[in-house]
Every structure is written in C-alpha cells, then in structure tokens.
Image (cartoon, rainbow, N blue to C red; front, side, top):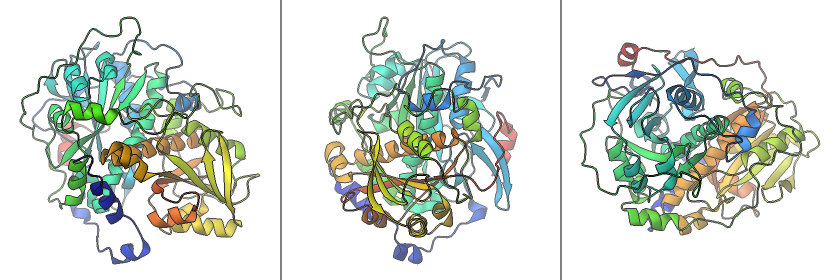
Length: 533
C-alpha cells in the first residue's frame, strides 16, 4: 500500500485548515476526559534512574549545528543514559492552571499534551541489564518489557541497519494517538511527527554533547517494531528509531553482531492505565498509518534505496562565520531555559541572530532516507522586525546560506499576514519573524510513497526543534503554530507553488522575563502517577 500515494494526498487535503472549515468545526474539549500525561504500567516494577547526572556543558549552538560528535565520548553507563533521557524528554517545569497541573518537558509538544513516549533497546550497560525498556519522565524510571539483547532483531526490522547493531542503545519514539487526538482530532497525525521531531532535535544535540554519534531511522517493519515494544495495536505505534553511540561503517571493531531476521512471537501487551474514561475514534489516522507502513524487510530496503534529492553541500562541522563557539552557553542551560513563548514584544532581533538561527537549523539531519547533506524541507519566512532587513517574505537558500527576498511589505502588513496565517493568533503577528517549513510533497511521495508523508513531517519537526533551541541559545523566545495550509502556499507563490506547509515557528524577543526550568527528575511517585488522571 505504501506506493498508493492517494492515501497521503487524501489525508493531507482532508486535514487542511481553512477559515471556512474551522468555522464549521464543532469539536469541543471535554476536560473531564483529558488524557493522563504519563503511561503507567501498574503491574510491572519500576527501575529508578540515577538523578545525579550532570548538565550538558558543551556550547549549545555548536551541538545544534553538528551532525557528528566533536570529540569522543566515554562509554555509555546508566548515569549517562539518564542525562540523555532527561534532557530529551524530562520534566523541567510544573505549571498550575484552571484546567489542571501541567508537567512541562525538555522539548515542547502541541497543546502541551506530550503524545510521544520513549522506549529503548539496549545491550548490557553498566548498571542496567540488556533489554527493552519504557521510560517514564513522571517518576524518572524505567520499566523492563523484555529481557535480553534485542539489537540484532531490531536491526533486522530496520533493513539490517548497521547503526543499530553497533550502538549500545537505540531509542524508539512512539505516539499514543488519543493523547493528542483528544484536542486536535484527525489532524493530530501530523503532530506525531512534529512532536517527535522537536524531541529528536534535543536528543541529537545532547548526544553530540556527550560524544555519542546519533542516527535517526524511519525505515523499519512497523508491526515487528510495535510487537518488540509490546504496543497496543490501534492505540500506539512506533514513529522513529534513534541509535546513540554507533560506530561509523569501516571503523575498527565496528561490531561483531549480525541482524537476526527470525520473527518474534507476538507477545501479550502488558496492562497500562487507560488514558481517559473514553476515547473517540479517528479512522483517518490509522488509515494513513497503515497505508504508510512497511511490511517486510525487503520493502524496507527498497524504501531506503529511494533517498530523495541530491546532496546539498553543507559542512555540518563548520561553525557559523558570524559566531565564535562558546557565545551561546551550555546546552543543558539552554534546554532548561527553553519554553514556548506566550507574548512577544515588537522589538527587532538582529540580522546576526536570524542568520544564526537559519544556519544552525539547516546543517543537516542524520536520517536514513536522506542522501548525505540532503533535505526534504525548505524554509520560508515572514520578517516583521529584523534590524537591517526590510519587512516582507523571504526564502532561505540553504546551498548559499543566504536569504532571497520574494516580496516587500510594510511592518503593519507583514505582521497582519504572519498573524493571519497562524490561524489569526496575535502572538505570531507580534513575532519578529515567523518561519514556515515547506516541502514539495508530490516529489517526496513519488520517491518514498505514503511513508514520505511521515518523513517530511518528521524532518520539518526536527528543523523546528533546532529553531527553538538556537533561538533560546541567543536569549530569544520561540513558539510553534499550526496554520492555514493553502494560504501559506499562496503567500509565498509563485516561488512556493506546488509546496505544502509542514510546521510554523514564530521567533522574537519575549515581552516578559521567564524563569528557567529546573531538573525535576522523579517529580512524582508511581502511586501519584497511578492516582493522577
């Protein structure tokens, strides 16, 4: 079914936002049925993670820009793994609202609903036996789902992926569909990839800081990976795999493992607490997910052979010419400062700040479906208040690391446009600049089938996550948004004709001073998690 791209095209068209559709949308939020924020296995024991891990101290912008570690890291032990898990998806803020208490994470999520769960498959590391584990940020613990080293089986499920074989740990990001669909309905399938991409941006930077080579994997046999992780069919599904600490092919002592293609027996799913009292069904989500699934190892290998676009000649290790390493502060401090801005002042950001955001966010993403240096994502932006840059519409040329002016506006007009495109939200009219990640969707689907829809949405999410981090690294703020799909394309046309908007991010100077987050590991006990709906 993956090659029958009408499924992706139909879903994309059916879930577009427009003024008329939103006016007719009758969805309301049932706060008494709001999904619980954490996945809890009440019948399985929890393994507490160490809380004395250090904060990543490497220069934040250098880590965001880099695709490979700047220096060799030490071997991965449980303390180092705890650091990676916390700064990827740990709790950094506790915020109380009329609608309840929110436990904000190290990476943002649509609606602060956090539908992405983290699992990992590991060899034996110091302090932890080999196995398949689930990570719970609520009590900062692990739950063992399988005992033993399943890396050879996971590698086989991913087409014999060598990075999984040679890595001590491979993380798996999954989506608990209802947690986001409760608010966003059928369009929430897009959010699976936006949210996991933003989390992956954190993971990539933290791994680089730790001296561990990361690689992202989207080519795998879906049903086999879901079974390995013991996920409930039709409720939760794997989105992406992320190997941490792999050795480059050809390196000395590359690895002595081989993929194990022997199928796993289907295991009973362990009981977990229901997310809500009741769940609505959104068949559009699972229709596209099934149509974009890969069924056999041969299909995975064929999919990976369709890598899109020729390499863009960008050197991920070169620092920005306008910035000396060390100016942005430690990565851990930047992640703790990161939030989602709720008010922007109308003050201008500098061209250097804008250039650093664009440069840092586009040095490449280590994805298995991309040729080295390639990308499926283009960045367009509306500049409202950037010193030395006329308000208007721009395209960022990643090849030349330069902006191309598409149209000039006065500031009032450009602010009205950026606010309107983001569903009329004043926040994005107040922003200094609003970025729109766009892709030639037809070209991606032609090359990668329906799974290409997952791929470009996910890559756009990673780029958005890098924009978040590089903004906060420079003392700015950022916030993500949805948008009126066709209106975005129309605004940037004829240059963007035929392209589809993936995600939008507004950047600017906050109109308030926010307190930084904290390391709130083990903020809740398991009994609190079990009793807290």
